[in-house]
Length: 185
Image 1 (cartoon, rainbow, N blue to C red):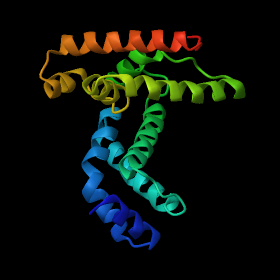
Image 2 (image 1 turned 30 degrees about the vertical axis):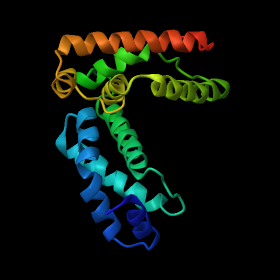
Image 3 (image 1 turned 180 degrees about the horizontal axis):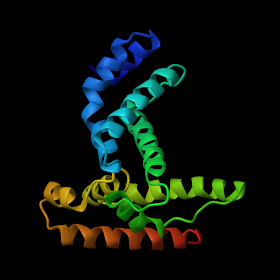
């Protein structure tokens, strides 16, 4: 079923909308939540909470593309759960991914800095659009989907060391790109 038909089911308030959403995007959502959370039950709960959030926001929202909308909700819920679960302790793989990328982003502490953060997000989108497709996919899968280095190496058919080097170079390029545009890091 295509996205517009699923959205139409949400507008009709048909419970079949959730069934179709799960059928089409359940595995992607589960993988995103699972990459962030180490507990399968927490990941499943985040995905189910995301489906409820979509149910509660569509309508009035009419997300296009639906996949990005659902994935953003899943990721945000998983990150929130991750921080709740790991408050005061370090928890491996996701912490490593966050540490790798955190030097590229300033931490907003005021309303003005929140506005700057949104502008920075737009610059990052521009940066990613300018990358070759393979580099963009690698970057997004590591830092948005929180996929492990070994899984990315297998996916791209390269060594884990090569993945780490490419990601390091991409982070340096992003940092340089943001500095050129006046973002102080």
